[in-house]
Image 1: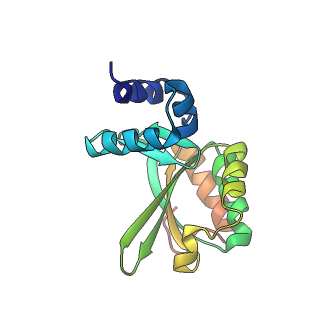
Image 2: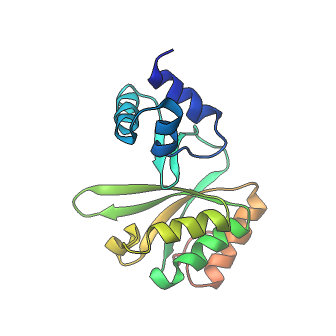
Image 3: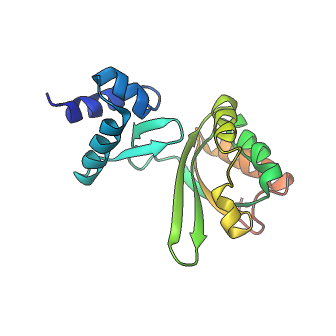
Length: 168
């Protein structure tokens, strides 16, 4: 089995995202070799997603996933993400509408406060994608059941984070 096939198997077998550095150590090559291999695998049509924590295989159309629109500044970012994960939901991605490039998507896959804290630490010195749209953005939310999703949306609404006029 060639290295690229082994990379797919390693990512598939892992319960958490695998960083390029971890894969490089596993296969005794440089991080840059792994980045190149992943690019070639993606070009071949393999649905590998690069998250802030590493690579994972894209899950196909999860049945309990919906998009929500939210608006907030940087000061409410932690509160927004904690609220999502505290109801057992996952912030799969962040989506903003760019006037030139159209829809820009950043992969998140945040399911716990630990994930949120690591993400916030990683973006501490940069601006979040939502700054491009004055805080207005979408999230794809994966949720365990309709009740958890409804409670999470209501909590975001009460905090003034859920974009107004969305159906509950």
